[in-house]
Amino acid sequence: MRPQFEELDYQQTPLGEVILRRRTMQTLGDLEIYEIMLGADFLMSSLFTVVEEALSDLGLAAAAESFPQQGLDVVVGGLGLGYTAKTALDHASLKKLIVVDYLKPVIEWHERGLVPLGHLLVEDERCGFEYGDFFQRAVKAQGVGFDSAKPDAKYHAILLDIDHSPAHLLNDKHASFYRADELSLMTEQLHPGGVFALWSDDPPEASFMKTLRDVFLSCETHVVPFENPILGRSSESTVYVAKV
Image (cartoon, rainbow, N blue to C red; front, side, top):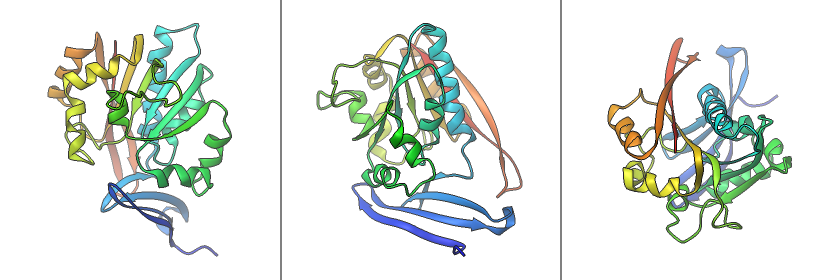
Protein backbone atom coordinates (compact mmCIF):
# COMPACT_ATOMS: atom_id res chain seq x y z
CA MET A 1 0.00 0.00 0.00
CA ARG A 2 1.44 3.35 -1.05
CA PRO A 3 1.74 6.11 1.55
CA GLN A 4 -0.63 9.06 1.20
CA PHE A 5 2.35 11.38 0.79
CA GLU A 6 5.77 10.50 -0.59
CA GLU A 7 8.82 12.58 -1.52
CA LEU A 8 10.33 10.93 -4.60
CA ASP A 9 13.37 13.16 -5.02
CA TYR A 10 14.98 16.28 -3.60
CA GLN A 11 17.88 18.15 -5.19
CA GLN A 12 19.56 21.53 -4.98
CA THR A 13 19.70 23.60 -8.18
CA PRO A 14 20.97 27.09 -9.11
CA LEU A 15 17.39 28.31 -8.54
CA GLY A 16 17.01 26.62 -5.14
CA GLU A 17 15.71 23.28 -3.90
CA VAL A 18 13.52 21.30 -6.27
CA ILE A 19 11.28 18.51 -4.99
CA LEU A 20 9.24 15.82 -6.71
CA ARG A 21 6.46 14.38 -4.59
CA ARG A 22 3.50 12.10 -4.97
CA ARG A 23 0.33 12.18 -2.92
CA THR A 24 -2.91 10.24 -2.77
CA MET A 25 -5.97 12.46 -2.27
CA GLN A 26 -8.71 10.53 -0.50
CA THR A 27 -11.17 13.36 -1.05
CA LEU A 28 -10.81 12.77 -4.81
CA GLY A 29 -11.32 9.02 -4.76
CA ASP A 30 -7.70 8.14 -3.87
CA LEU A 31 -6.45 10.02 -6.93
CA GLU A 32 -2.67 9.85 -7.30
CA ILE A 33 -1.14 13.28 -7.91
CA TYR A 34 2.44 14.25 -8.81
CA GLU A 35 3.76 17.67 -7.82
CA ILE A 36 6.96 19.63 -8.50
CA MET A 37 8.02 22.28 -6.01
CA LEU A 38 10.72 24.92 -6.40
CA GLY A 39 11.25 26.09 -2.86
CA ALA A 40 7.80 27.22 -1.73
CA ASP A 41 6.54 27.64 -5.32
CA PHE A 42 4.35 25.08 -7.05
CA LEU A 43 5.85 24.52 -10.49
CA MET A 44 3.41 21.86 -11.65
CA SER A 45 0.70 19.50 -10.43
CA SER A 46 -0.77 16.60 -12.39
CA LEU A 47 -4.12 17.69 -10.96
CA PHE A 48 -4.09 20.76 -13.22
CA THR A 49 -3.01 20.04 -16.80
CA VAL A 50 -5.83 21.45 -18.95
CA VAL A 51 -4.16 24.78 -19.72
CA GLU A 52 -0.71 23.24 -20.31
CA GLU A 53 -2.34 20.94 -22.87
CA ALA A 54 -4.28 23.87 -24.36
CA LEU A 55 -0.97 25.73 -24.80
CA SER A 56 0.20 23.01 -27.19
CA ASP A 57 -3.15 22.57 -28.92
CA LEU A 58 -3.61 26.30 -29.56
CA GLY A 59 0.02 26.93 -30.49
CA LEU A 60 0.29 24.04 -32.91
CA ALA A 61 -3.12 24.73 -34.44
CA ALA A 62 -1.98 28.29 -35.21
CA ALA A 63 1.30 27.01 -36.66
CA ALA A 64 -0.52 24.45 -38.81
CA GLU A 65 -2.56 27.29 -40.32
CA SER A 66 0.66 28.97 -41.43
CA PHE A 67 2.38 25.76 -42.53
CA PRO A 68 -0.37 23.35 -43.62
CA GLN A 69 1.89 21.15 -45.74
CA GLN A 70 4.94 21.01 -43.46
CA GLY A 71 6.02 18.95 -40.50
CA LEU A 72 6.38 21.30 -37.54
CA ASP A 73 9.61 21.93 -35.63
CA VAL A 74 8.58 23.05 -32.15
CA VAL A 75 10.29 24.29 -28.98
CA VAL A 76 8.77 23.92 -25.52
CA GLY A 77 10.27 26.07 -22.78
CA GLY A 78 9.71 24.36 -19.43
CA LEU A 79 9.37 20.59 -19.06
CA GLY A 80 7.49 20.28 -15.77
CA LEU A 81 5.59 16.99 -15.68
CA GLY A 82 5.64 16.82 -19.48
CA TYR A 83 2.01 17.59 -20.34
CA THR A 84 2.75 20.41 -22.78
CA ALA A 85 5.38 18.29 -24.53
CA LYS A 86 3.21 15.15 -24.62
CA THR A 87 0.28 17.06 -26.12
CA ALA A 88 2.59 18.47 -28.81
CA LEU A 89 3.74 14.94 -29.63
CA ASP A 90 0.11 13.87 -30.01
CA HIS A 91 -0.20 16.19 -33.04
CA ALA A 92 0.38 14.34 -36.30
CA SER A 93 1.79 17.57 -37.77
CA LEU A 94 4.73 17.59 -35.32
CA LYS A 95 8.09 16.67 -36.86
CA LYS A 96 10.58 17.53 -34.11
CA LEU A 97 10.29 18.74 -30.52
CA ILE A 98 13.01 20.39 -28.43
CA VAL A 99 12.22 20.76 -24.72
CA VAL A 100 14.43 23.26 -22.87
CA ASP A 101 14.65 23.21 -19.08
CA TYR A 102 17.05 24.88 -16.66
CA LEU A 103 16.36 22.38 -13.86
CA LYS A 104 18.45 19.32 -14.64
CA PRO A 105 16.69 17.13 -12.04
CA VAL A 106 13.38 17.63 -13.88
CA ILE A 107 14.91 16.21 -17.07
CA GLU A 108 16.44 13.34 -15.08
CA TRP A 109 13.06 12.48 -13.53
CA HIS A 110 11.68 11.90 -17.01
CA GLU A 111 14.72 9.90 -18.09
CA ARG A 112 14.50 7.75 -14.94
CA GLY A 113 10.76 7.19 -15.30
CA LEU A 114 9.91 8.84 -11.97
CA VAL A 115 7.02 10.80 -13.54
CA PRO A 116 4.06 9.23 -15.39
CA LEU A 117 4.79 10.69 -18.86
CA GLY A 118 8.56 10.31 -18.73
CA HIS A 119 8.87 7.12 -20.76
CA LEU A 120 6.51 8.44 -23.44
CA LEU A 121 8.72 11.47 -24.04
CA VAL A 122 12.02 9.59 -23.80
CA GLU A 123 10.92 6.83 -26.18
CA ASP A 124 9.56 9.20 -28.84
CA GLU A 125 12.33 9.76 -31.39
CA ARG A 126 10.90 13.16 -32.30
CA CYS A 127 11.53 14.50 -28.79
CA GLY A 128 14.81 15.77 -27.37
CA PHE A 129 15.73 17.46 -24.07
CA GLU A 130 18.06 20.45 -23.78
CA TYR A 131 19.47 21.30 -20.37
CA GLY A 132 19.79 25.08 -20.46
CA ASP A 133 18.28 28.47 -19.79
CA PHE A 134 15.35 29.04 -22.17
CA PHE A 135 15.61 32.81 -21.80
CA GLN A 136 19.33 32.85 -22.66
CA ARG A 137 18.76 30.48 -25.58
CA ALA A 138 15.87 32.65 -26.83
CA VAL A 139 18.19 35.61 -27.41
CA LYS A 140 21.26 33.50 -28.26
CA ALA A 141 23.16 35.09 -25.40
CA GLN A 142 25.98 32.55 -25.81
CA GLY A 143 25.61 32.32 -29.58
CA VAL A 144 23.49 29.14 -29.33
CA GLY A 145 19.78 28.82 -29.96
CA PHE A 146 17.39 26.27 -28.55
CA ASP A 147 19.05 23.25 -30.18
CA SER A 148 22.73 23.10 -29.21
CA ALA A 149 23.40 20.70 -32.09
CA LYS A 150 21.91 23.15 -34.61
CA PRO A 151 22.65 26.68 -33.34
CA ASP A 152 21.01 28.41 -36.30
CA ALA A 153 17.85 26.29 -36.53
CA LYS A 154 14.48 27.99 -37.00
CA TYR A 155 11.14 26.79 -35.69
CA HIS A 156 7.48 26.87 -36.58
CA ALA A 157 6.34 27.33 -32.98
CA ILE A 158 7.83 28.25 -29.60
CA LEU A 159 5.67 27.38 -26.58
CA LEU A 160 6.60 28.82 -23.18
CA ASP A 161 5.43 27.53 -19.78
CA ILE A 162 7.94 28.62 -17.13
CA ASP A 163 6.88 31.74 -15.22
CA HIS A 164 3.48 32.02 -13.55
CA SER A 165 2.78 35.01 -15.81
CA PRO A 166 4.69 37.87 -17.46
CA ALA A 167 4.16 39.83 -14.24
CA HIS A 168 4.60 36.95 -11.73
CA LEU A 169 8.06 35.52 -12.32
CA LEU A 170 9.89 32.54 -10.89
CA ASN A 171 13.09 34.56 -11.15
CA ASP A 172 13.44 38.33 -11.51
CA LYS A 173 16.13 37.77 -14.16
CA HIS A 174 13.37 36.67 -16.56
CA ALA A 175 11.73 40.13 -16.57
CA SER A 176 13.69 41.48 -19.55
CA PHE A 177 12.44 38.67 -21.81
CA TYR A 178 8.89 39.99 -21.70
CA ARG A 179 9.95 43.32 -23.20
CA ALA A 180 9.87 44.13 -26.89
CA ASP A 181 13.61 44.01 -27.55
CA GLU A 182 14.18 40.45 -26.29
CA LEU A 183 10.93 39.15 -27.76
CA SER A 184 12.11 40.58 -31.08
CA LEU A 185 15.40 38.72 -30.75
CA MET A 186 13.51 35.49 -30.10
CA THR A 187 11.48 35.91 -33.30
CA GLU A 188 14.73 35.53 -35.27
CA GLN A 189 14.46 31.82 -34.44
CA LEU A 190 10.96 31.59 -35.92
CA HIS A 191 10.10 31.01 -39.57
CA PRO A 192 7.97 33.82 -41.09
CA GLY A 193 4.43 32.98 -40.01
CA GLY A 194 5.77 31.16 -36.95
CA VAL A 195 4.00 31.16 -33.59
CA PHE A 196 4.95 32.18 -30.07
CA ALA A 197 2.48 30.90 -27.45
CA LEU A 198 2.65 31.51 -23.72
CA TRP A 199 0.88 30.06 -20.67
CA SER A 200 -0.10 32.49 -17.92
CA ASP A 201 -1.87 31.84 -14.64
CA ASP A 202 -3.17 35.43 -14.62
CA PRO A 203 -5.99 37.01 -16.65
CA PRO A 204 -5.00 38.66 -19.96
CA GLU A 205 -2.76 41.65 -19.29
CA ALA A 206 -3.29 44.74 -21.45
CA SER A 207 0.30 45.93 -21.07
CA PHE A 208 1.73 42.62 -22.23
CA MET A 209 -0.70 42.47 -25.14
CA LYS A 210 0.55 45.90 -26.20
CA THR A 211 4.13 44.62 -26.09
CA LEU A 212 3.19 41.60 -28.21
CA ARG A 213 1.49 43.84 -30.77
CA ASP A 214 4.68 45.93 -30.99
CA VAL A 215 6.65 42.80 -31.94
CA PHE A 216 4.28 40.41 -33.73
CA LEU A 217 2.02 40.82 -36.74
CA SER A 218 -0.95 39.38 -34.85
CA CYS A 219 -1.75 38.20 -31.35
CA GLU A 220 -4.74 36.98 -29.38
CA THR A 221 -5.60 35.64 -25.95
CA HIS A 222 -7.54 32.53 -25.02
CA VAL A 223 -9.02 32.28 -21.52
CA VAL A 224 -9.06 28.57 -20.68
CA PRO A 225 -11.36 27.36 -17.87
CA PHE A 226 -10.65 24.24 -15.83
CA GLU A 227 -12.16 22.56 -12.80
CA ASN A 228 -10.40 23.18 -9.50
CA PRO A 229 -11.46 20.43 -7.09
CA ILE A 230 -9.31 21.89 -4.33
CA LEU A 231 -11.37 25.10 -4.34
CA GLY A 232 -14.58 23.38 -5.42
CA ARG A 233 -15.11 25.72 -8.37
CA SER A 234 -13.92 26.51 -11.88
CA SER A 235 -10.68 28.46 -12.38
CA GLU A 236 -9.17 30.13 -15.44
CA SER A 237 -5.76 30.70 -16.97
CA THR A 238 -4.63 32.42 -20.17
CA VAL A 239 -2.86 31.32 -23.34
CA TYR A 240 -1.35 34.06 -25.52
CA VAL A 241 -0.84 33.19 -29.19
CA ALA A 242 1.19 35.52 -31.44
CA LYS A 243 2.44 35.20 -35.02
CA VAL A 244 5.38 36.80 -36.79
